[in-house]
Picture 1: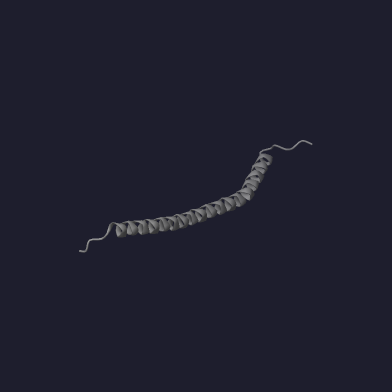
Picture 2: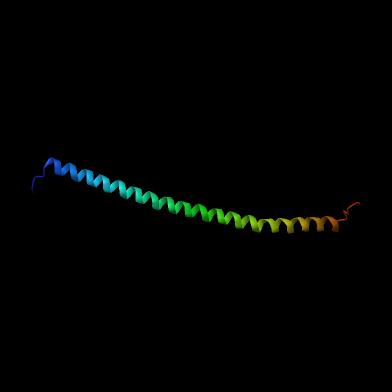
Length: 77
């Protein structure tokens, strides 16, 4: 094994550190992109759930009113 000079070792360390920082930044971007996608999907599902919930509540309220009318409660005018 050949002995390396100190400037050569320092240069290698700096190059590897720069490469490591670039790789970490790239990984962070990919992870953020995945998280943003997950948040967008979650929000989309919440919106779809809310859209489906509104008609369900209307039908439930109509059934409640029909039940009250059937039980003998009538509206007074």
